[in-house]
Length: 390
Image (cartoon, rainbow, N blue to C red; front, side):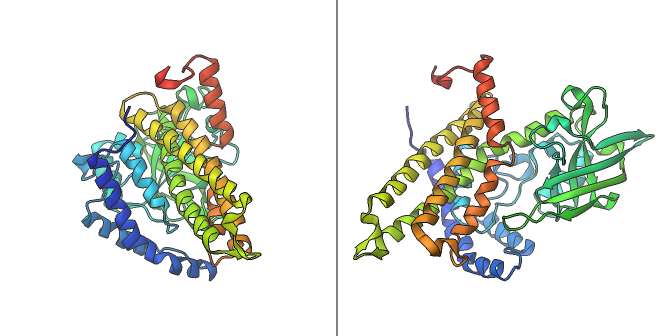
């Protein structure tokens, strides 16, 4: 059993780390200044400039197949890179990506939607969540009614990441109410903003914010169906599944950076004539954080390894998402405590992380849903205790 990285994995990881350190981290103080002034932290043009710089480093389309100009990296390597991205609080991501389910598009749809998205010329959002359908995604109500060669969409989607900026949405709509979403009653549509939907900003405790998407008799051509009629729920679950190892990978990067700050604070801050790191209370917070972070790292890498082996990753990914999301919340909370009042100010990124990572326990599968999946798999015998080593 080898827990080390191959030379190639290490080289890719280190190159990504170098790029983040040299090109992304220098923007951090300006980001905090803008956010304190209630301005956008990173403009879309600035993100684009960074992505094009990264392309010169060879980083373009981490998960994108090589036939579309991407790197088509294994899931383990993608996980390592997302950890590096998480080390900086600048909301950066490498370019050349598109929603994984867009690769189910027809050749015509690929020319209109997929290829321009990969090149950064178009921006998409994925819309399945509704006011009455969050964790219970099968309860969606936004309807699509056939009208000749078109479909008429009516309803609302909510908490849609990127919905305020996207120029097209991948919308999961009910096309056969009697069958229900899980049983082939939902379909995915590619819907340009120009077709008539509108977005409304949702303020949250984090920076930026998701959107509500409003569909009022939005007419969509039949040719804009993604996949097949009735395949929408399956595609939606495929889209959500990928985030269950990339989100906690990002969380490990945040936790590492935050814990480094706590260690530095513990070694320099003095109270009552001694460094606060000499206090057992501080030592235990650091020790618990390191232990939990390392446990999360291996759960996440095992989930990514499961993907690379062509095995069903759902059980491993649910454990990684559940533990990784909880871990980063606990670590950031301890780091804020170690910094005391300064940790609570906007002069440091800790309170920003504190607000940001709380979302990790909710989006793309709440803690409760992950527990449900894990327990159900065991109770129904879908998986064995001990996983692939059982």
